[in-house]
Image (cartoon, rainbow, N blue to C red):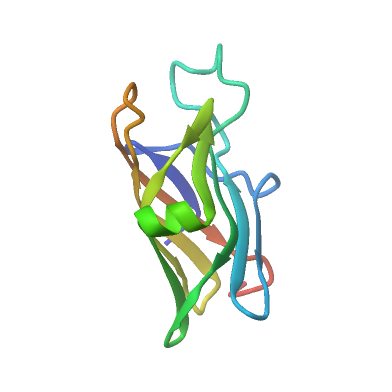
Length: 130
């Protein structure tokens, strides 16, 4: 799988320079994963591309991988969201593979104005699996 930031079926690309991932020795994840571009039709008013973030989130070891189920409980307990114009909740699964690829697959939830959208983000951890 390659690096991507796919929102609503459109690959906006990954901005590796604006993205960062840190996993502590105890498995605590802090990550900011930035798209490279804004969705079509938003460039006039969007100040920055979408950003998926996880702050201080404990990952669960599952064999050679680490995982997190992002559900209502995880969203209530930790700082997890997609930021694009405003903060929107996400639901899905985050996996860190042994080859150093971090993958989130799930949904950006509806905020009452915007419909729910499929979200797939994959970012290679620098220094792993290169």
